[in-house]
Image (tube, rainbow, N blue to C red; front, side, top):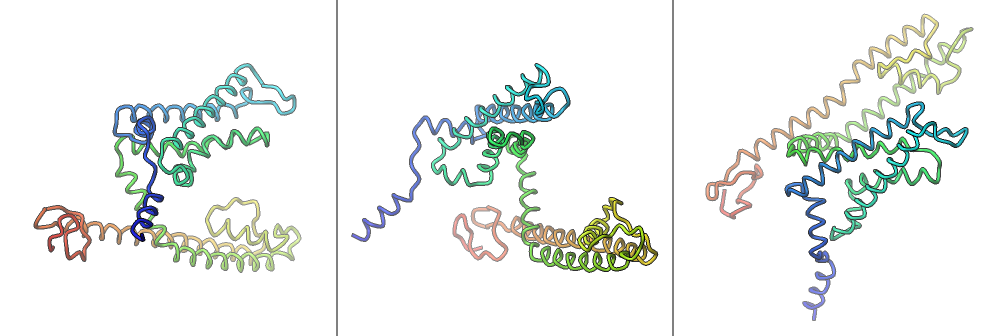
Length: 296
């Protein structure tokens, strides 16, 4: 009885079997190794590029929508508007087909690529409600990252994943570093406010403006909209600039160390080969081959 219940639970968790039609659609949309899959992905990338060009074009004077008169600025602007909506409908249909041809639509919809595909057309529908936000359609440019898969440049994606993994492993050090920087800029901004507030032409009206100046100065951006006028303020500004130069390389060192460590581990894994089946890719401390089971 318990065995039957266990089998029923496994059947309930098993993904549904796709029909031949859904299998074919899945092959075309998700498989770039097939001919029609490659054709579909290339056509999709061209459509994304064309839609991005139109979004940028609509921001040019004479090719957009005049909100004051609620009319198009020209006939070309009206044509671009309807073409952009054609792309939106196209991406909507493509997204629905992706949901239709996968075994677990919810898992795809909540995945990274699923959310990217959703946001490629969702801002256009929000435009109907809010009346603004057409420029947010540029979010669909993130879908161009699929070009690495289409052009068989998977090693670019591997490198990107390695960089992301290194940043993630360094997250604790980076958080501590950012917290220390926040403390420093708060102290520097408050001190600058106290130094400058008695000047007749002081630009530091309050502590938040002092903190804003400290952030801009320490990051070596230097907008120049708020600058010290007193001698003491200029000395403090020079110290904050030098401090910023010394701190800006710290997070880079964290990530670089993790990348080097990752490459060392990867090198050790690739170097290990099974003497029985001559396959590579084993962990450094592996005792048995994960392919044939023989002792290493």
